[in-house]
Length: 240
Ligand code: JBB
Image 1: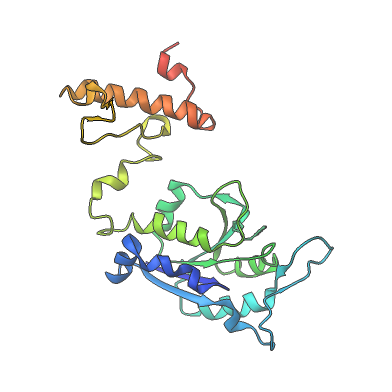
Image 2: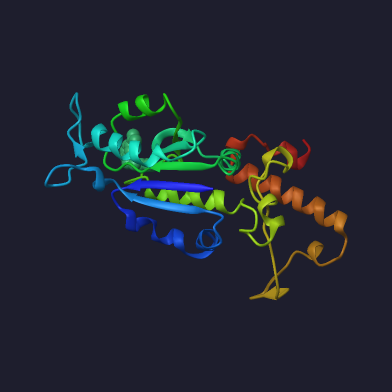
């Protein structure tokens, strides 16, 4: 698939060329195109922002600069391309949505800075493309660049041949087939005893039924403790 990222900090995307993502780019599985938004400015100071109408703190990114940038970037792209706009006010990124993105021909990720991008940009481009305002959590970042790295990595590891171990992608926290969407439990490897701490004996006993039962219990306990919002109460663990 093809991903275009538009940003005032194109160097921020350099880590995408490393590791698993870099391998996907090298193999041609992922085509990454990073664009400097300032290329579409027309004034001497290469201005991308201005003061907000109605008052308030900070600056807002100008619609004219973003409009010209997206006209050019989208020109040659499939109409099935999704426009993704990182914003703390967006819909939550979930593994389900990552799986959906992995199926489309391309994404254009529009990275805002300051207090965000003039809302008319999305009014305009949603006439021709699906636009997703997207949040990766309930906190505020300084810009959408880190969000674009998150999306790229989450999507790339689902592409054929990227992970190497095709089993791992399906069997992790947030896998849709885990009972009730519970989290993964703790994991262990050698040595069996480390700094006086032993691996739980059930994992070394060779009874695969007991191992599965123990892992389910650990998974539900961790989910109830760390993620009460996922709606798996302690009754699923204690049976009461
Ligand atoms: C960003 C977090 C954007 O779009 C907005 C907005 C508000 C505050 C800051 C930003 C910068 S971009 S992506 C995730 C922040 O409303």
